[in-house]
Amino acid sequence: MSAEESAAAAPAPSTGTPRGPRGSYAKGQARRQAIVDEALAVFSRTGFHSGSLREIAKRVGLTPAGLMHHFADKEELFVEVLRQRDEKVRQAAGDPAEHTLVQQAEKVVAYNQTTRGLTSLYAIVSAEATDSEHPSHADFAERYRSGARNAEELLRAGQEAGEVRADIDPALAARLISAVMDGIQLQWLLDEQVDMVPLFEEFVRGYLLPPPRR
Image 1 (cartoon, rainbow, N blue to C red):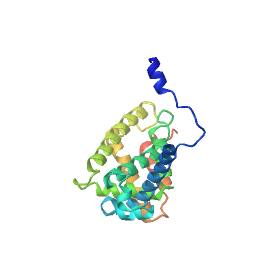
Image 2 (tube, helix red, strand yellow):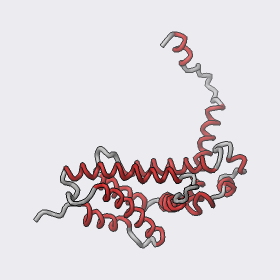
Image 3 (cartoon, helix red, strand yellow):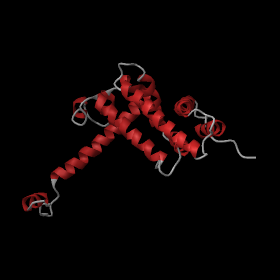
Image 4 (cartoon, one colour):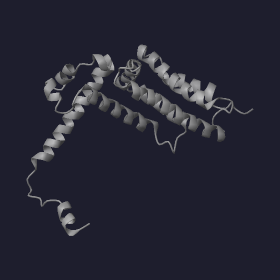
Protein backbone atom coordinates (compact mmCIF):
# COMPACT_ATOMS: atom_id res chain seq x y z
CA MET A 1 0.00 0.00 0.00
CA SER A 2 1.43 3.41 -0.94
CA ALA A 3 1.77 6.33 1.47
CA GLU A 4 -1.05 8.10 -0.37
CA GLU A 5 -3.33 5.06 -0.05
CA SER A 6 -2.47 4.71 3.63
CA ALA A 7 -3.33 8.34 4.25
CA ALA A 8 -6.58 8.00 2.35
CA ALA A 9 -7.52 4.89 4.34
CA ALA A 10 -6.71 6.43 7.72
CA PRO A 11 -9.74 7.51 9.81
CA ALA A 12 -10.46 11.21 10.02
CA PRO A 13 -9.54 12.92 13.31
CA SER A 14 -12.35 12.88 15.84
CA THR A 15 -13.90 16.25 16.64
CA GLY A 16 -15.87 14.87 19.57
CA THR A 17 -19.14 15.69 17.79
CA PRO A 18 -21.41 12.83 16.69
CA ARG A 19 -21.57 12.68 12.91
CA GLY A 20 -24.98 12.80 11.32
CA PRO A 21 -24.49 10.26 8.50
CA ARG A 22 -23.56 7.46 10.91
CA GLY A 23 -26.66 8.07 13.00
CA SER A 24 -28.79 8.37 9.89
CA TYR A 25 -27.37 5.08 8.60
CA ALA A 26 -28.20 3.30 11.86
CA LYS A 27 -31.73 4.68 11.80
CA GLY A 28 -32.11 3.67 8.18
CA GLN A 29 -30.96 0.12 8.95
CA ALA A 30 -33.33 -0.09 11.90
CA ARG A 31 -36.23 1.08 9.75
CA ARG A 32 -35.26 -1.37 7.01
CA GLN A 33 -35.28 -4.25 9.51
CA ALA A 34 -38.64 -3.12 10.88
CA ILE A 35 -40.01 -3.28 7.34
CA VAL A 36 -38.65 -6.81 6.90
CA ASP A 37 -40.18 -7.90 10.22
CA GLU A 38 -43.61 -6.56 9.29
CA ALA A 39 -43.33 -7.98 5.78
CA LEU A 40 -42.73 -11.41 7.32
CA ALA A 41 -45.95 -11.04 9.32
CA VAL A 42 -47.91 -10.06 6.20
CA PHE A 43 -46.39 -12.56 3.76
CA SER A 44 -46.68 -15.43 6.24
CA ARG A 45 -50.41 -14.73 6.50
CA THR A 46 -51.34 -13.92 2.92
CA GLY A 47 -48.46 -15.08 0.72
CA PHE A 48 -46.53 -13.06 -1.82
CA HIS A 49 -49.23 -12.20 -4.32
CA SER A 50 -51.80 -11.08 -1.78
CA GLY A 51 -49.27 -9.43 0.51
CA SER A 52 -49.90 -5.69 0.37
CA LEU A 53 -47.08 -3.17 0.36
CA ARG A 54 -49.59 -0.62 1.55
CA GLU A 55 -50.33 -2.74 4.63
CA ILE A 56 -46.64 -3.31 5.32
CA ALA A 57 -45.91 0.41 4.99
CA LYS A 58 -48.77 1.29 7.32
CA ARG A 59 -47.51 -1.14 9.96
CA VAL A 60 -44.17 0.72 10.11
CA GLY A 61 -45.65 4.21 9.86
CA LEU A 62 -44.64 4.87 6.26
CA THR A 63 -46.38 5.59 3.00
CA PRO A 64 -45.86 3.10 0.15
CA ALA A 65 -43.61 5.71 -1.48
CA GLY A 66 -41.61 6.00 1.74
CA LEU A 67 -41.18 2.24 1.88
CA MET A 68 -39.72 2.37 -1.64
CA HIS A 69 -36.79 4.38 -0.29
CA HIS A 70 -35.68 1.17 1.43
CA PHE A 71 -36.76 -1.49 -1.08
CA ALA A 72 -37.20 -0.95 -4.80
CA ASP A 73 -40.28 -3.18 -5.06
CA LYS A 74 -42.20 -5.96 -3.38
CA GLU A 75 -40.03 -8.66 -4.95
CA GLU A 76 -36.84 -7.18 -3.49
CA LEU A 77 -38.46 -6.97 -0.06
CA PHE A 78 -39.70 -10.53 -0.35
CA VAL A 79 -36.23 -11.80 -1.30
CA GLU A 80 -34.78 -10.15 1.81
CA VAL A 81 -37.45 -11.74 4.01
CA LEU A 82 -36.56 -15.17 2.60
CA ARG A 83 -32.83 -14.52 2.93
CA GLN A 84 -33.18 -13.74 6.62
CA ARG A 85 -35.42 -16.76 7.10
CA ASP A 86 -32.82 -19.01 5.46
CA GLU A 87 -30.04 -17.61 7.63
CA LYS A 88 -32.01 -18.30 10.81
CA VAL A 89 -32.66 -21.88 9.70
CA ARG A 90 -28.97 -22.40 8.88
CA GLN A 91 -28.03 -21.17 12.34
CA ALA A 92 -30.59 -23.50 13.91
CA ALA A 93 -29.19 -26.48 11.98
CA GLY A 94 -25.71 -25.97 13.38
CA ASP A 95 -22.30 -26.49 11.82
CA PRO A 96 -22.41 -29.29 9.20
CA ALA A 97 -18.91 -30.29 10.27
CA GLU A 98 -20.19 -31.03 13.78
CA HIS A 99 -23.62 -32.56 13.07
CA THR A 100 -24.88 -35.35 10.85
CA LEU A 101 -27.63 -34.69 8.31
CA VAL A 102 -30.16 -36.37 10.60
CA GLN A 103 -29.10 -34.22 13.56
CA GLN A 104 -29.32 -31.07 11.46
CA ALA A 105 -32.78 -31.98 10.19
CA GLU A 106 -33.98 -32.69 13.73
CA LYS A 107 -32.67 -29.32 14.90
CA VAL A 108 -34.46 -27.54 12.06
CA VAL A 109 -37.75 -29.29 12.81
CA ALA A 110 -37.50 -28.29 16.48
CA TYR A 111 -36.63 -24.71 15.53
CA ASN A 112 -39.48 -24.43 13.03
CA GLN A 113 -41.94 -25.39 15.75
CA THR A 114 -40.89 -22.29 17.69
CA THR A 115 -41.25 -19.87 14.74
CA ARG A 116 -44.77 -20.12 13.36
CA GLY A 117 -44.41 -17.01 11.19
CA LEU A 118 -41.32 -18.25 9.38
CA THR A 119 -42.72 -21.75 9.01
CA SER A 120 -46.01 -20.43 7.67
CA LEU A 121 -44.17 -18.18 5.23
CA TYR A 122 -42.22 -21.11 3.81
CA ALA A 123 -45.29 -23.34 3.53
CA ILE A 124 -47.40 -20.70 1.80
CA VAL A 125 -44.74 -19.45 -0.56
CA SER A 126 -43.48 -22.90 -1.55
CA ALA A 127 -47.05 -23.74 -2.57
CA GLU A 128 -47.45 -20.44 -4.42
CA ALA A 129 -44.13 -20.97 -6.17
CA THR A 130 -45.46 -24.01 -8.02
CA ASP A 131 -46.90 -21.37 -10.39
CA SER A 132 -44.25 -20.90 -13.09
CA GLU A 133 -45.01 -17.17 -13.12
CA HIS A 134 -44.23 -16.74 -9.42
CA PRO A 135 -41.05 -14.68 -8.83
CA SER A 136 -39.62 -17.45 -6.63
CA HIS A 137 -40.56 -20.40 -8.86
CA ALA A 138 -37.03 -21.03 -10.14
CA ASP A 139 -35.52 -20.35 -6.73
CA PHE A 140 -37.72 -22.87 -4.93
CA ALA A 141 -37.21 -25.52 -7.61
CA GLU A 142 -33.46 -25.11 -7.21
CA ARG A 143 -33.77 -25.13 -3.41
CA TYR A 144 -35.25 -28.62 -3.54
CA ARG A 145 -32.79 -29.82 -6.19
CA SER A 146 -29.70 -28.54 -4.38
CA GLY A 147 -31.05 -29.68 -1.02
CA ALA A 148 -31.57 -33.17 -2.41
CA ARG A 149 -28.06 -33.26 -3.89
CA ASN A 150 -26.49 -32.22 -0.60
CA ALA A 151 -28.64 -34.61 1.42
CA GLU A 152 -27.83 -37.51 -0.91
CA GLU A 153 -24.11 -36.90 -0.46
CA LEU A 154 -24.45 -36.76 3.32
CA LEU A 155 -26.63 -39.87 3.39
CA ARG A 156 -24.03 -41.82 1.41
CA ALA A 157 -21.37 -40.69 3.88
CA GLY A 158 -23.67 -41.74 6.70
CA GLN A 159 -24.08 -45.18 5.16
CA GLU A 160 -20.32 -45.58 4.91
CA ALA A 161 -20.00 -44.60 8.58
CA GLY A 162 -22.76 -47.00 9.61
CA GLU A 163 -25.00 -44.15 10.80
CA VAL A 164 -27.65 -44.59 8.08
CA ARG A 165 -29.36 -47.78 6.92
CA ALA A 166 -27.47 -49.45 4.12
CA ASP A 167 -30.61 -50.69 2.35
CA ILE A 168 -32.12 -47.29 1.45
CA ASP A 169 -31.55 -45.42 -1.80
CA PRO A 170 -29.83 -42.14 -0.83
CA ALA A 171 -31.25 -40.28 -3.84
CA LEU A 172 -34.81 -41.23 -2.97
CA ALA A 173 -34.31 -40.77 0.76
CA ALA A 174 -32.92 -37.27 0.18
CA ARG A 175 -36.22 -36.22 -1.39
CA LEU A 176 -38.28 -38.02 1.22
CA ILE A 177 -36.65 -36.16 4.11
CA SER A 178 -37.78 -32.76 2.82
CA ALA A 179 -41.18 -34.19 1.88
CA VAL A 180 -41.73 -35.46 5.42
CA MET A 181 -40.55 -32.20 6.95
CA ASP A 182 -42.87 -30.17 4.71
CA GLY A 183 -45.78 -32.51 5.37
CA ILE A 184 -45.61 -32.44 9.15
CA GLN A 185 -45.11 -28.67 9.07
CA LEU A 186 -48.38 -28.32 7.18
CA GLN A 187 -50.20 -30.53 9.70
CA TRP A 188 -48.77 -28.47 12.58
CA LEU A 189 -49.81 -25.19 10.95
CA LEU A 190 -53.34 -26.56 10.70
CA ASP A 191 -53.38 -28.01 14.20
CA GLU A 192 -50.84 -26.90 16.80
CA GLN A 193 -51.63 -29.96 18.91
CA VAL A 194 -49.51 -31.84 16.37
CA ASP A 195 -45.97 -32.14 17.72
CA MET A 196 -43.52 -32.11 14.83
CA VAL A 197 -40.49 -33.25 16.81
CA PRO A 198 -41.60 -36.79 17.82
CA LEU A 199 -43.19 -37.27 14.39
CA PHE A 200 -39.91 -36.56 12.65
CA GLU A 201 -37.98 -38.61 15.18
CA GLU A 202 -40.28 -41.56 14.44
CA PHE A 203 -39.57 -41.19 10.72
CA VAL A 204 -35.84 -41.09 11.39
CA ARG A 205 -35.97 -44.11 13.70
CA GLY A 206 -38.10 -46.21 11.38
CA TYR A 207 -36.59 -45.27 8.05
CA LEU A 208 -33.12 -43.79 8.32
CA LEU A 209 -31.35 -45.28 11.33
CA PRO A 210 -29.89 -48.80 11.27
CA PRO A 211 -31.88 -51.29 13.39
CA PRO A 212 -30.50 -51.76 16.89
CA ARG A 213 -28.07 -54.61 17.30
CA ARG A 214 -29.31 -57.63 19.19
